[in-house]
Structure formats: structure tokens, C-alpha cells
Image (cartoon, rainbow, N blue to C red; front, side, top):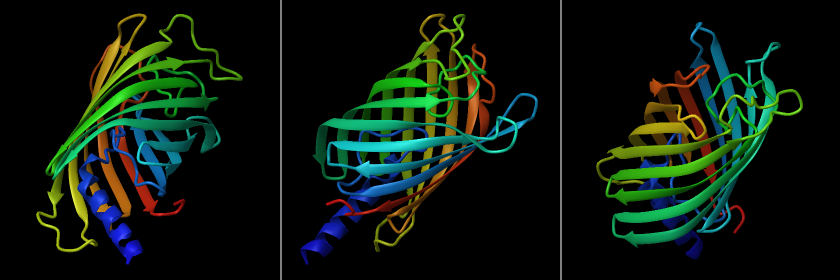
Amino acid sequence: MKKIISIISILLTFKANAQELFVMTEPASNMPTGSIGIRAMNSFMYEKNGTLNYHVMPELMWGISAKWMVHVQSFHSNRSTGGLKTEGGSIYAKYRFFSSDDIHKHFRMAFYGRYSKNRADLHQEEIETMGHNTGYEGGLVATKLVNKVAVSSSLSYERALDNKPDYKFPSTQSNNATNYTLSIGKLMYPKTYTSLNQTNINLMCEFLGQTLNQNGKSNLDIVPSLQFIIRSQARIDVAYRKELYSSMTRTAPNGFMIKFEYTFFNVTK
């Protein structure tokens, strides 16, 4: 009986937080304690000459506790000749240090950090340690959930290093940046829960911005998306990323993204 109650509690928590499982950003909330997740982000980004860049980033996630979670991820793309190649990987950690919970609402804050290694060629001024640059990122994220609407925002510092062994970071470019995001999600379906097996449909919109600290160049993107949570464990995201503004060189800022995810509960408890 205790095990059944525990499983139901986890599933209800997962459903209540479904609209804050954003496509492009991580909220301040963590995975359920003891859970393991697998994820694959697929991006189809178009260069200005029409060339299609395909990136796939498989990821393994672990909910260590209510406060801690970690991700490990690898990066693969077809930008180099010879088809899909492994370019690097990263480790990400998040620590939730504040939580204020109430009926149908909560507010949470967390620190997060990422370290990445990448050996791909350096081809743009934009700094992105998730898939392009060797380097690190650290920041703060805050998430507010009220009924069926979640709002999340983050601020971070990101630093690019050399993409060893072949590509030294250009001395003429800014090697560090400030990132800022705003994500909004709303649960569209179901209107009322009648079964734990109901599919959740979430509509989201995210804004992603970056300013290069050494020269002031910046960009801002918008990412509308549709998300499906199936049987409280499987997740499918479909999104389109569109550049609204940029004063920096970016190789392929626009394109589609599809993300698949599955969560296994009570694996390490």
C-alpha cells in the first residue's frame, strides 16, 4: 500500500509540474527523487545558404534528491564532412535552494552549472556550451507555478574556451557572455483530471537572449512549442526557434526542434 501511495504521489506531482518542463530551458524544479530520465534533443537548423545542420544530443538525467539533480549529455552533428560525428559532451548540475509550496501553486529558485568539452570548428560569435563551445556556464533560475500557468526566468554567465585539439578561440571575439531567458507555459488539456493515464498538452513560448560582455553584441530568439506528456512518463516536444534580433555572427539561428524524453521512477531509492 505504501508503494502504491508513493507512485501515485509522484505521478500527481509530475502532472502538476508538466507545464514547467520547458523545451529550451530547465526550471527551478527538479525531477522526482530517485528517478532516472533519458532524453534526445534533435535540432534541424538552417544556415543562411540553405544548408541544413542536424544536431542530436542524447542525455541521461538523475534526480538525486529533492534539491539536487545531474545530467550528462553528448553532442553529435553533421556539420563536418562524412556524416554524423561525435563532437563532445557536457555535465550539468542543479541545486534547488528555495521552495515555497501551496495548493495549486509554488515558487522555486535554483543554482545551476554546466561544463562542456567540444572539438568542433569555431564558426560563430555566439557562445553556446550546449553543442558548440568548450567552456562553462553558471546561473540562477526562478520558477513560479499558479494553477495551469508556469513562468520561469534565468540569468547566467557563460565562458568559452579553446575547442581542443584543433581550434583556438579567436582573440578578436568576446569569450564570455551574459544569458537571459523567459519561459511561459500553460496546460491546455485536460481541463480536469479523471485518470493518471491522461495525456497532458502544454503550449509554451520561450525567449532566449545573449549579450557578449566584451563588445556588447547581442541576440534575442523566440521559441514557441507544443508539448505532450504521455502516461505521466513519456514526453514529446515540437518547437520552432526564430531569431528576432542579432548584431553578432550566428551560423544557423532558425530551425525546428524535436525532443523525446522518458522518466523511470523510484530507480535509485
